[in-house]
Image (cartoon, rainbow, N blue to C red; front, side):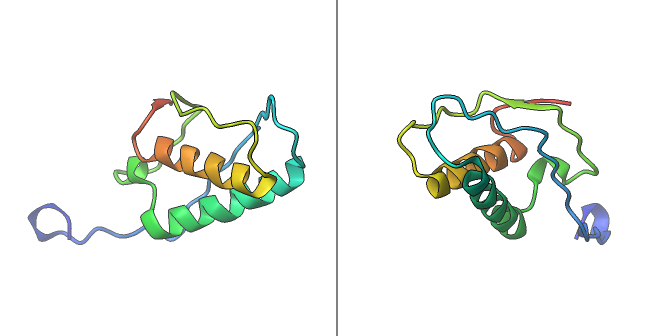
Length: 98
């Protein structure tokens, strides 16, 4: 329910387009990182939504101020951690350039 008893429609579709994931200092298979990233980000969005888009469509050019990641992670773990960092940014943590 929204304000004054209004029913808010939940979005039927959420699209997240990542132009580039730059992996500097990591020795991992980028395709495996990408697959793990996509799987984890899909899970996080399905479970938690995208809080910054609660008031309508959101277009973010850059997410900054996200935590650094350790260089020794496996491709799967790196993809998961990147997805969590991006979702944190989409949840209002870090700096978002629109």
